[in-house]
Image (cartoon, rainbow, N blue to C red; front, side, top):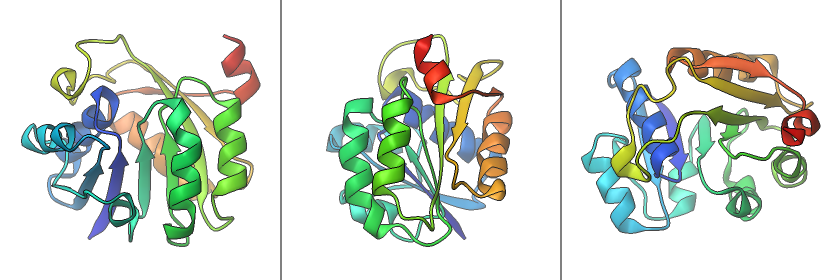
Length: 181
């Protein structure tokens, strides 16, 4: 069974989890991690993840797809920490609202055997946190995608398909152009 790890189980991470669980109905295992154990438990209770890993490394271990749904300021440290624990061929994406720094961190901290595709879902914000999460929150929303130069075409397709499956509209853009807006 394919394993997907979602790190950060607030509004975006939990909404992604809910949407993927609805789409894949048990065909994948979705493991969640959040620094706040109560948030992680609420996300599991709301059906955003199949199980919670209290340890970050346990969450990403063996995952073929990792979604970093944390504040941008946490992304650098997360990439540095998880990089050595990612399996070859793993696809990593984020949901941060700035991209150039994130792309630089991915190039620096993620192994060359991992494909990184930066992401920024432009959703209308609802209620904050896991309580506001909804599986259809991405419906008709523009979802910016910025593939790293090393990203494998299959990885880009995987993330693009995920965005479409969640109801979003993939929009490919350069990191510098994205941040200028």
